[in-house]
Amino acid sequence: MESSETVERLEGVRADAAGSRPEDEPGSGVVAAFGRQLKLLRVRSGLERAEFGKLTGYAAQSVASFEQGRRIPPPRFIDRADEVLDAGGVLKALKDEVGRAQYPAFFRDMARLEAEAVALHVYATQAVPGLLQTEEYARAVFAMRRPLLDEDTVEQRVAARLARQEIFARRPMPTLSFVIEESVLRRPIGGWTVMQGQLEQVMLHGQRRNVEFQVMPTARAEHCGLAGPFTLIENLDGRRMAYVEVQRDSRLYTDRSAVRDIEEQYGILRAQALTPRESLVSVEKLLGER
Image 1 (spheres, rainbow, N blue to C red):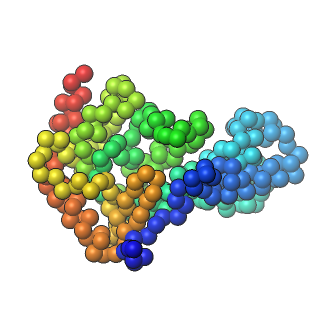
Image 2 (cartoon, rainbow, N blue to C red):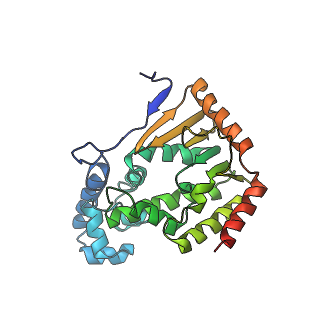
Image 3 (tube, rainbow, N blue to C red):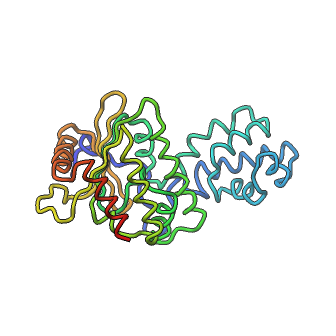
């Protein structure tokens, strides 16, 4: 059994076999608690849902979903609701916890680490990394998930994935690099029109000064990344970690020797892949094949 110093399981792993949902999923935990608090404050203020919805810019049906814990309210709604209901910051105080609930349980801690990272290095083998995904591509990915996700959850996950991309606007700029298997870029998830937009977005991000994007050709005879995808993370304190995820189970490696092994893999992968310039040319060629 692996030492707790070597690997940490991130909180909120998958639901059990009976189909129960992890804490803080819509309908339970902090989301349900927020909904109850919201309703109490609205009733105390003497506002009907429709009237309150107009004041906050949301339909009465959306307000009902928030109050019943069926949908996760966005930050702008929480801020406005706190003001309209004169809640004195009670609702705003829950905003971070509610925001964490928009991610799958197994990814929540990683989302926090990602948002605070000064450097991220991603090796992708199955789909375009979430940080690079277009809205249409992300929606196609979640719509294909099995067991099926309901429509509200799909839209929630898409919004959460797009929110993560605020990292590109951060100052100071983090260092970001991606090595993506060529097969990922050839797999037309969502159809060719969706994939075309996705490839164009990859090219745009690849031209950012703080982003390095490389393609690992399928025809490479030498390949050191056969153990699967991973993400390397460095935080503001200089601490380096490695995140590995498979089948909704996630692990965060923190022991220096374990992280060093994955860093070594990534360094060799970058040497084996196409250069950043060659990679952008290869994506441009993929776009020209249709």
